[in-house]
Image (cartoon, rainbow over all chains, first blue to last red; front, side, top):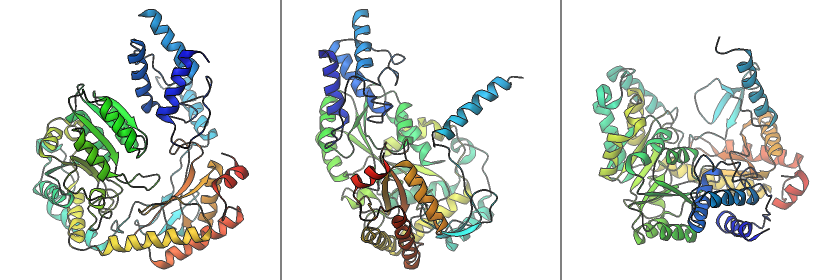
Length: 84
Length: 415
């Protein structure tokens, strides 16, 4: 897990897991399809990433599939960092 | 032909997929008015059998109350069957406005606007009162109709962990720069039966200059000492900015909903809420029935008191039998089974025992949180509850889940 993935993982654990929920989140853990969080609540992660990395992720690219794992989210951030 | 074989087959495959995933929903035909005892045809084609209904939102037992039925008949005679219009063209009768006045008084607000349903009220209210300069901050377990309504609104969306006041406060701080902040929650959460901490939410709203919206559909009529709702229970009556609620549950159970709250916010809904502007008015017969419901509830707490007694008796009975129930103060009592198939098997066996309940599982509730949601009614007598407890005990014994912990149930049946 690289630094970017670690930032995303830490945010997911802090923002979405309830207290006492000790599920492990790795870079390939399905976050939305695995039921950890619904796509509706993921908007705060998108906003966090946009602010932290000074990027804009268009809604069309912020699909539940693209936001399903730490690895896929990190790939999306990298893609839009390059565009910026 | 546009609906050709390939299109038809594509839909058939999708439906088959829903079935294979165990998510296929089937209706059960009821050959009786809504009540504690109903005649249910299930599976379709079988002779109806009489069962105890423990899954209706008929909390106060008013769905088929003779006085409500008589008032609806009178409404039909005096104001007709339909209005064939939206409200603002020629769909507002004197009784529509009278019902809005009575609801305003009952809920302790400034004004009220009727909608065809609370689903419509939630679908329209946010877009009507907020813009892209504002933010909506919702509890993560709010009803699906609130999620839909928020998606239709241009204001920024955010959520907080279920009933986590610390997390809500963080969000309020994060969104200090917005023009308006609106905190959104259910009053009673429909799947868990727990109550929102409205006293703490209102305190935070006052601290951070935010408005509060509560969907009190599973509370209006029976939560609180005189049944006014969660705000009465939490001691913040008169301090909620927007209440959305339904006439389709405790308040007679037919249909219809409303937005009730600050005068200007209700007026904004009258001017801008699309489900109000572009959908038919609530039928006169329903308005007349709802007025009678409010008559029955005003100054008389007998029905909500009986419901409260029933809920306590039921919770105690199931707990003593060794079932794992979600704790709470509402007449929504979830029996936790965790495994989706187990929830369906137990519900099926209970039906065979004369108890009508339904299993809930993902995506209606979170994965690994499958349950049977039981709902009490003032229409239930002690005998109904005793028979229900006996049936749950018998079926629970069959699956060896009595007295078992969550972990023991999961170890045996999986998630």
